[in-house]
Structure formats: C-alpha cells, structure tokens
Length: 306
Image (cartoon, rainbow, N blue to C red; front, side, top):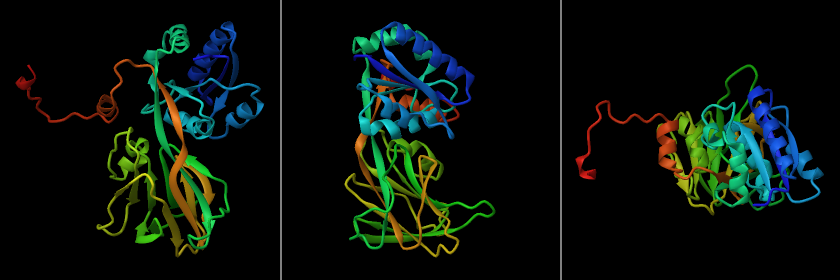
C-alpha cells in the first residue's frame, strides 16, 4: 500500500485519541505522507471537507475511537472505496476496531502497510431513501442514506414514548403490519448491535443477508426475518398523527418519514473496507470476548480433542 495521503479522524473531545492522532500524523509526515486530520463526533464531521479538498487519491483512513467513530467513517468513506484502519482508542465495546494493543508499535504498523502485510475485510452496507406514494414511484424525495450496522424506522418525541404502526412490504408484497416501537433493518455486521439487543439473530459478518427485527412488538407472533441480499424492504408509517416517524442510520437521525411516504431499504452498491492487522483474527473469538459468553457454569474437559 502506498501512503501518500492519509486521513486521520479521532474521537471528538477525547484527549487520548487526539494524542494518538497527533503522534501518527507526525510519523506519517516524516515518511513524506500528506495527512488530513480532524475530530469526528456528533457535532464534528470532517469527511466532506477531507474528500472535497483532496487533490490526490486518499490511500488510507485511520479512525481512532470506538465503534461509533468507525461507523461514521464507513458511511462517508465506503462510496470512495477508501480502506479504514479503525483502532479502539477511547471507545468501549470495539466490535469493528483493532485493539489498541495491536497498535502500540505505530512505526511497525506503517511498515506492515507499506509491505502489504495485512488483510482487508469487506462488509456489506445498506442504503435507503424516502419515496412518495406507491412502489412504482422510483424518484426519491430525499438523498440516499448509508448504514453499516442498521437502518431503523421508529418515532421520536421529546415528551412521550410513541407507539408506531408500520406496514412492511418485501419486493412489493405486503408482509405484515407492526405495532410497537419500530423496525430494525440490519446487516450481518449490525446483527451484534441494536438488533441483538432486540432479540434478533446473530449473523456471521462474512454473509450477505438482511435481517428485519421488530422492536417490542405488541404481537408475540411478530418475529425476526432473514432475507436474501437482493430483497427490497419498503416501510410505510400508518396512523402517524403526530408526524413523528424517523429514519435512523447507525443510530444517527437521517430524515423524517411523512404519511404517504415510504422508505425503501436495500443492499448498498458499495462495501466498507476494514484493514485487519491481527494474524489470528477470529470472528468467534470476537463474539466470545465482546459478548462475554461464559458457557456452562461448570467447565467440562473435552478429551476428544486430545
């Protein structure tokens, strides 16, 4: 990998990640690399400026923070095909990030990247847009939104918890109506996020599939669905007298969905590219460590493995 121009985005208002960013920027500049650096957070979005001001291809995005910082980077960088090295500095769970222990020898990391001693994991994403009227209307009334974890359709209100009524179509066929707190449309990557908290299935992040999970549905027969990757999920808000239904992308507010509008969700035409440094990377080890799987209370030895 050539490192002629690199983005460094660090978690906003986090002193540790900013310090790491400054160290990395100085090291890369000493290697004749042009660095674009800035904070990333709820009120800080450096990516549009980085992408617009770049005079040459961006070879790498170093994202220092937690999963939220990595998700923001993926939404903005995936369309440009920029690989992301996400490191858990100042984050919490760290499903999407390399551990900071793997990143202690930063000069060694740059050497590995120069020598192509790393792997790239491509993760599917979702895209959504809001349309007016029937499914035959293919002209969106909003911009296209991207998500690496999930799209969520649910209401928002400052003063009360609102029950939503949502009708769902899959490939033009009405499947069900859901009364509850909303619907989550998730990628395999997002199946270990909001989806698993709503009792949705865990899917291997190497798969291409879409999961639909109701949030606290009032009908016990409302169950999660796993769909093939070519499916188009359309959601209509019904009975939304307070105009409260919103589209959320990776937990960030996207746009309002008005009565008579529908939101279509499908697999995006771009993939997020994450750099893997660990030689012994294991998806199942990640599940055990991050979800704190303990197994049985009494540990039984398995002599069959000897």
